[in-house]
Amino acid sequence: MSGPTTSTTLDDLFANIIAQARFTAEEQSLMMGLVTQYNIANEAGKTVQIPKYPAIAATDLTEGTDMSSTQVSTSSVTVTVGEVGAQVVLTDMAAFGAGNPAVELGTVLGNAIATKMDKDLLALFSGFSSGLGAAGAEITVADLFKAQATLRANKVTGNLAAVLHPFQAYQIKAGLTNTFANPNGGDAQNAAMINGYVGTIAGIDVYESANLTVDGAGDAVAAVFAPEALAIAMKRDFGIESQRDASLRAFELNATAAYGVAELDDTFGVKITADAVL
Image (cartoon, rainbow, N blue to C red; front, side):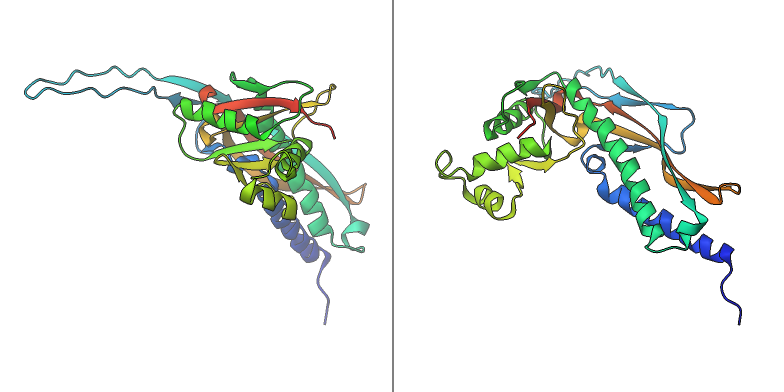
């Protein structure tokens, strides 16, 4: 009885790499779940205009008197789509060697695309007009409360999220676990002491990401925001294509995605500039 052919085995391997890479990209992208997403795969062109509708005011009515209309003038945000990609080489020897190349390479490629998406979205934090904190100063729980108050005063409703650099998150956790400075920290304090995880503070879901850029002075721009603050427009979702290089005795695995990011509503986000070193 003949064994499986090389072609069949490689086809199975590629399918597993793609599945693992897609799973990794979806699981490892933090920001994708925190912003507004638009699927523009079926729309022509490389740009999309997202309309923004203003708020209008209701007025008291008088019985028997006709209502007056309010003119609604929309503005729009233009999102330009571009391609991103990452490539790895799978040699013939590696494909049949030790380890699990399907899982390992899939994880590498998925992480690369997820990280790029997150960095592009996180870079938009600096564009928010409202800002708190200062370079060289540690972030505090009070900063989160101030950001929450600012957004609520802007009539932002619904869920809020904060994304901090891990060193900034440590500063928040340290403040919560300091029983002298914060003797009544409650559940959040207990969670930080036991699990090292800060869940919700002032109605804000707090996350940490090493993809936040730290500048040369050791500072990073974090933010508290609602999903409507930022947008990502997906033209082509994550995908992998293989290409044979016979002389190299290997396959190129090319992972790509096409998307664009933009600030959607400036009043829905507050940036927090703070120290990001231990």
